Length: 112
Ligand code: AMP
Image (tube, rainbow, N blue to C red; front, side, top):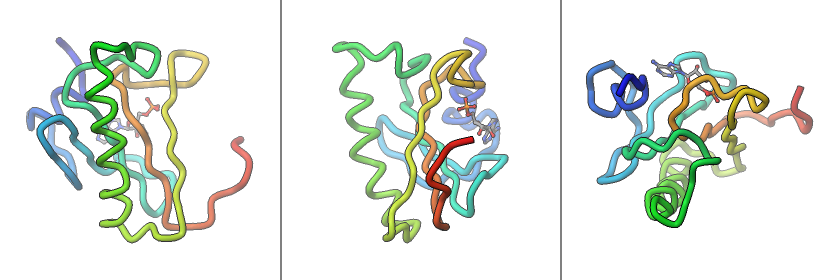
C-alpha cells in the first residue's frame, strides 16, 4: 500500500519519533503549526476517523491512551488542541488516521 504514514511507522521514511508502542506511533509534524505539533497514528492502516468501526476501535483506544503520555512528556501541562481532519471537506491531506497534538502556546480560540 502506498501510504506515507505507513512508510514512516515502518521506518522507510525518516521521522522525528516522540512515542511508540505496539499499536501507536507518534512523530513531529514536518510543517509545525505550533511550538509543539505532533501527529499520533495507529500502526494499523485506518484511512480516517470516518473508517473507525468496532473491529478497529481497539487501535483507536490505544491512541487515546498514548496521547496523555505524549502530552506529559512534552510538558503540555496547560493543555493542548487535538485535531483529526477527515476527508476533502475536512482538509485531510494524508489518508491514514492521525491526530494532531498542538500546543506549547495559548492557541487562538477560533479556527480560521
Ligand atoms: P492533515 O492535513 O490533517 O491530513 O495532516 C497531515 C499532516 O502531515 C500535515 O500537517 C503535514 O505537515 C504532515 N506531514 C506530511 N508529510 C509528513 C512527513 N513526512 N513527516 C511529518 N509530517 C508530515
